[in-house]
Image (cartoon, rainbow, N blue to C red; front, side, top):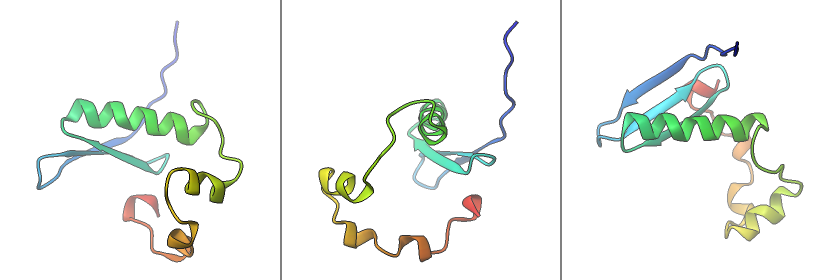
Length: 87
């Protein structure tokens, strides 16, 4: 018998027709062109966030440079106000 974890997910249809899926408990969100795509993307984001998938990033600045982002451009991001669902 498998045990399923109950998750509280909020789905929002945006003005542009896309869907946002928000996992309130984990504090992450994703989006997609359809409800199903938004939920599939959210499952992936939750797995990455909780460490169930992917590799941990050892050096954040190096990672940002590798994907073409200047670390100085995101400096101070921790001081910015978080979206409501992440507070």
